[in-house]
Length: 294
Image (cartoon, rainbow, N blue to C red):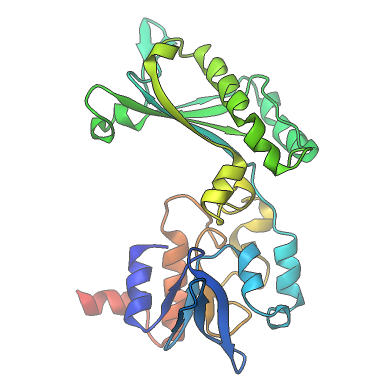
């Protein structure tokens, strides 16, 4: 959610709804009028409740009959994206890749051995099998561009891969194998950036798809963007057909965030789109509010 949307919601008597605190929607006379939190406190909204809670969890916060069968069916068929497997490193130097005439230390690099290897994602995910053969990965070292992100002379390195959430032995099996998987990614990376020897690595922190979900329930099944952005979950289909205009089946409740168009990543799009719809329902517009503040 954008800061602009947050300010607009609060200025118009709304309540910001997040997974961290909310356990139940307060519905009176068929309308969402507030929220109840896990600590027993509750908040009531003058005009609207705006949610960024993942739709997989949102439907459990009010009686099922209030959502309607089409909405419930859409939630049931919501698809996760290829789950992320992440290792964060503190290092004494960034990855250095061999190029003609020397080495290159980029801010970001992508490693994909072949297009055929990318096609294995769906197959491995369906089988619940970890595939560490030439694993595709994204390697990010922000300190190359911004040295203030680490102590002087030090660097951060983030290695992203994609592996199944639902393993054959269940997602909890990630706790037993994540170190082994992280080691395999590092060994593969060293084929291209051999300077990252053990003495250059000061510390690491591993996040399996299950860890990502534990950290933030919005990362449902390890989906860092809340869900797949496939043809059935983009544009007027996100989060589902008939409910892409941010108005939810329960009057007074609006949805924004990564489960709405255009999805996750840092765009501000979901918040801007939701603000336009909400303000229209309030009898104004984004342009009018902006001009009024100017």
